[in-house]
Length: 250
Image (tube, rainbow, N blue to C red; front, side):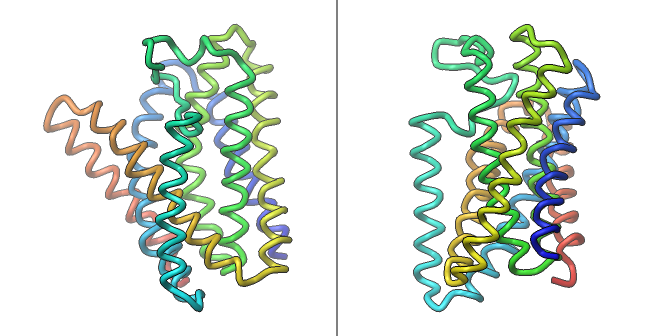
């Protein structure tokens, strides 16, 4: 039953986000993407601080090792971000020469998205091995984060000249890696249970990094008035409230 839940959750977190990106168009995409970025920021922060990391510390025999794992995870993500730009996908981003990322080609987008969703699958698997409540809470957090990301990737592929249907098919292929990550995570961590606290710690580190190092700076660049700040603050708070409700009872 747990394995089936992981598989379904991986499909929900990817297919629903990709399908939403296809169904919406132009300005609606970007307006929705900005709001979802705010909500996902609050959601990821709350899930990391009130669910993933406390669970990791509770299950670990050595809490100091868990703390070191969180630090190492964030440090590694910082290195990978600057070395390879693994999280730097989005329709409005530019490279150091001011050129659109769309000019780099189709396959870097697909490969990057595949690696990203594979990691999401591992995160979902580790959370379901703790409890179904935590698993669905983490799935909701990943879904909210993936929607703006998939929207950006879909726009990039369309700008490359791909038809809507072909861009959708390629993104579904990339999204299938989430299920592969979920299945691998289930069999590895179920067989080697002592790894689970460290997988949860890495998941929490990933959520903290994405929200604080990627999403919050992006949102800060979009603030031009007090009303912008208030809207973002309320939406971030909404994300936190959602996290508390979906994780209630865990």
